[in-house]
Length: 80
Image 1 (cartoon, one colour):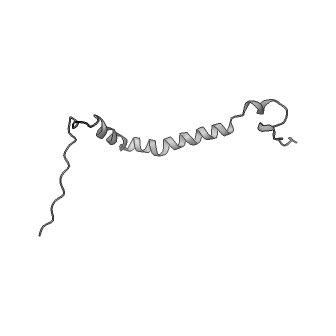
Image 2: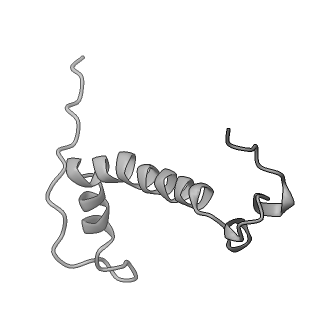
Image 3: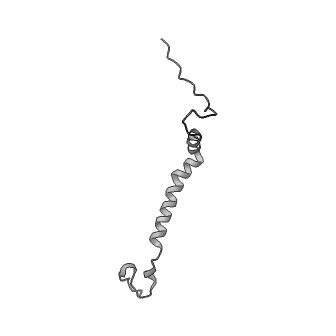
């Protein structure tokens, strides 16, 4: 008894079947490109981390009033 060969996958049809979106296969293939995959894997989380850190490090409007109190009224240590 011989094993059946796997079915060969042909090219993506030029016209979508009735009721299917036009770019579904093309969009998935584009997302699987190595450059896009690397950008989504490392770039997007990196941008989110940088934005989060920028929000943490940015001074609030009440922090720069010169009273020696930090944001929310917390006392800051004296320099010295």
